[in-house]
Amino acid sequence: MTTYEGEEESIETPPFDLLRMPVVGRFLTWRHSRTVLQVPLLLVSVAMILHGLLGPSIAPKNLATVLSWVHFRGVLILVLLCAGNFFCMACPFMLVRNAARKVFRPQLNFPRVLRNKWISVALFAGILFCYELFGLWSSPWLTAWVIVGYFGLALGVDGLFKHATFCKFVCPIGQFNFIASTVSPLEVKVRELAICGTCGTKDCIKGARDPKDELVVLQRGCELALFQPAKVGNLDCTFCLDCVHACPHDNVGIIARMPMEELSVDAVRSGVGRLSQRKDIAGLSVIFTFGALMNAFGMVSPIYALESWLGAVLHMRSAGTVLGVIFGVVLVVEPLVLLGVATWATRRVVEVRRGWLSTMVRYSYSLVPMGFGMWLAHYSFHFLTGALTIVPVVQSAAVDLGLSVLGAPMWSLLGMPVGLVKPIEFGFLLLGCAGSMIVAWTLAEEDSAERAVGAFAPWAVVCLLLLAASLWMMALPMDMRATLMAG
Image 1 (cartoon, rainbow, N blue to C red):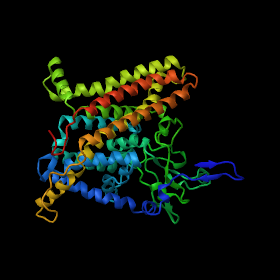
Image 2: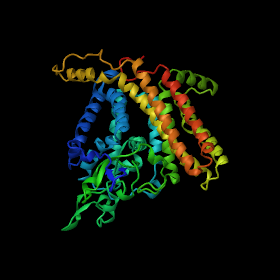
Image 3: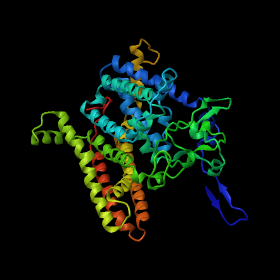
Image 4: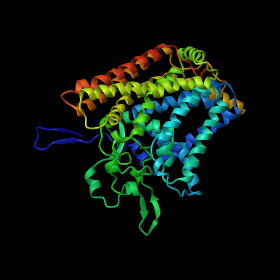
């Protein structure tokens, strides 16, 4: 909110609120808007599964692989950059789950010991590992079964456990979106806290019930346990807008905010607590950041030389074992060394009240923008260079069904030339590094304004090392996976 002084009364300009926009806002506040977004994605998912199982086995000619590994990832990361977690809002898995819950109502609460991010962290790392080991980008059949498995897991978890257990504690795509959306410019939040102070029903989290029958829920509240007045940032928020529909005061919007700001805020936040005390979310942030490097490293030529060398040195014949060693070094050993040294150096300069591990946890969130920049550079490369490949694939699928209305497949359609995309990649990486520097500096100033430079320096070095590694990988020729440009 902007205030202009110098007059008898200050003039306040309200922040941008997407729900106040004439067309988009009216659509999003419509009770059925989420379903309207979910249905097309469900139909596309079904088409991907069928084409993956029954269509051509050549990845660049199959909807399952082209849409999954070229278009979905590219659109996802660009939407997160420009807006927020709108994919979770349109998630087709939840459409099927909601339909199933009308028949099978879950009775159990998720075990308290599992109410954290460690399951999803393991699944996230596991997907990255399987993607490389089994070459998912090259197998429509395996990709289709991954989608089927995802639907099955969502139905299984939320069929047994109440609330949004799958979204909050299990879904690896959701956790990716939660962490990535910390750098997004929009947030679901209350418009005026004073109004929440006068609210006696708390419908945003409890839900709205029929005044004649308290057992009848007219509109559910937030299933992820985010109480809007105490909510901070986008972590754990699926943009489902249940709170918007439930609020009797029309006091929840999708409001513009400063990207990355929540990464340096350590206030107690509803449904999350203090970030400095959440080792699981810090672990997710680390896997998010270093997983971006590992995922890109798997697509450049040095990975093959490294695998051959490791296999010979360690006398390993199994490709999975060799790849597991590389993943262990990149996702576990390297982060522990870099973050451990940086934490030690910071504590040498600044006497902080929190312990060694808490300091590492606190500063680890500063790496998220750098990780996001790497995901953005990587995914946008595949998307921009292969944006038009969906056209001939859809044409080919129509021909397979005996429909010639779309014409013969135009396999020559690709996307932007690699030479034009490279500068965009480098720009994303530089912006990501700059964002991490800003967050690290903010944390260092909070620890000690007088010695902020000394506390900040170790983390600046970590950011620059990650930037150098990212620039090196993005400068190398990259496998054009799931496109006809693949080598």
